[in-house]
Length: 498
Image (cartoon, rainbow, N blue to C red; front, side, top):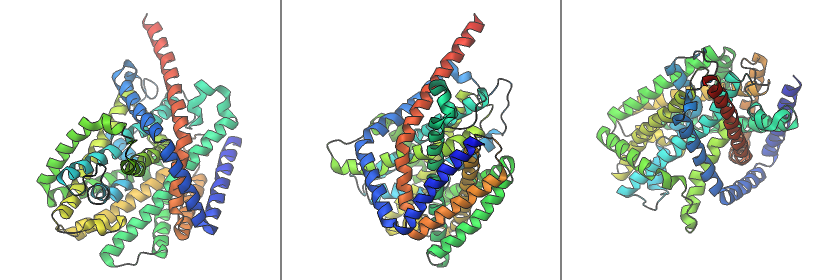
């Protein structure tokens, strides 16, 4: 309990100071964090590109080598969840609300507002828009989540260590993981998780408000978002208290049903042939240009470098900052899978679904813009998807489904977040106490509301990106620790065979 108290108290104090700063000096907080973020993206852009690509290469290596047969658990362990439910849970936690928020917005932005290659509004610009969207939401993103989740699951279920970030570093840090060093690592993981989930709650409330405003002319205001967050907090707290096997499982399956319903409605109602052609061509372009995009830093082109900082480096830092949360949650639901099965399904399946999602919603939005049917790019990001639906049949029905989907993704993300934070605050307990879940649920909602009210949500987002830099170093150490343990295990297996 001593470690629980230390990690929780130190994290809560830091968050409290940040919130107080955000209330009384929101502009100063945003300015300071933005300056630090700008410095990091400019000075460490090359580092992010190399380290994230290395994580992807490591995942491929683990997949093709004999260690892929090693189970995340004992050899007799069976998966706790069916494959369909497992995929639904990891997908809902990993991308969730972001797909709805950026499904049409990002491809359209790359096509009509700021092109990654300078081909603004052209046919080549359409291809580039989808290719780079695939890049940001594809294999690299899931490799970041996958490597953290894999390491946590390996140490938790095969080595019987607590489900904490610090416990994975025991092979290289030894007893330091139970001292101040371990506490510092876990506090950083808690802060990254809080920044990520609270930012998602804020953006989710904004998009629900944006959809209601577009459809029913309900004003866009903090007070409407206050009501939304209070209602959703009540719902995700009920779900969280019901346990992992009930609340999150049921909601994750509901998410996938609604997401696929919305996806197939847009696919068949929208420009179906265009979507299929864009999907096929963009996958080819993505695979063909993957090495070049992975290391593209544009050292001699300031304009292109600014775009890379704003999008690619930003995304890599975003995924790294989210990885403690998503990684711990995916690890918790992945017991009994082999390393090879884990990597295949965590990297490939969500990426392909995401590619088809962006081709469908992004392709439909770009078609409206390219054919001058509607100037969708003028809309606010949180209203853009609803603006796309407005120009296709059954637009109101799709908009209502989208709002419900955002709500369920919203609840699932917050539910997963409170569960993970409770685990990290109880020394990795796989079934943390309900009172701790309740405390974290209230804290997350309060932080989101305070920062929405004070205009400090962007500062929180900046803080999450800043936290990604030190956590990326921890990820490197975690990977080194995994390889050390795997090498020892392979040697033991080899001796037994001989």
